[in-house]
Image 1: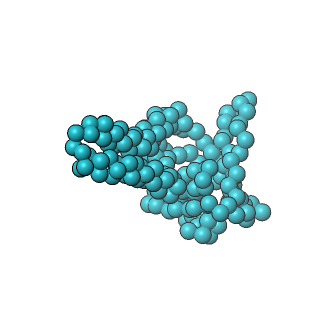
Image 2: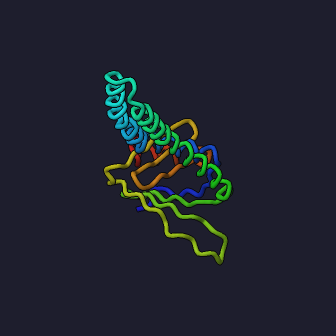
Image 3: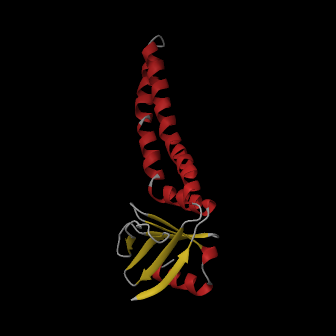
Amino acid sequence: MEKLNLVYSIKKDDWLEGYDLGYKLFRKKFTVLKAAIFLIPIALFIDSLVRDPYFTVGYVCIAVCLGAMFCIFATPKMQRRTAEHALDELEGDTYNLKVFDDKLTVETVLPEGETPPPPTVISLDDKSLRAVETENIIGVFTKEISLVLPKSAMNQNDLDILRKTLKI
């Protein structure tokens, strides 16, 4: 049974806020873990340099490990910047959210004659489902899907239905 049918469009700033929330929920820990793994060889090379300060390969290896750590931390920032530029193309697009008892579906509303992509379906039984509410948005995230809903497109009744359905 359909609980809510909401047609909305999203601003670039709201989408980026949701992107940042999704990163913090699902990818930040993995990024830190990948970078932390390089601390082990760095410690081993520092130990080698303490024992033999003329071991010049140790200095190079430490620099390579620090460079790899920098790249690991810089990659999400570069991905965000790329997504930010791509959002200019999506400005003004309209979406249709349908809330059911067991799932959420989002369809892109296109002008007549154009074939819309298949709807995005988020199962409320998904173990990775996380819903977060901020001042401007409601973010619904799984490991594969990020859904950002602007609060400016909703009235109080819509917000209450979403909060109850998503258990925010």
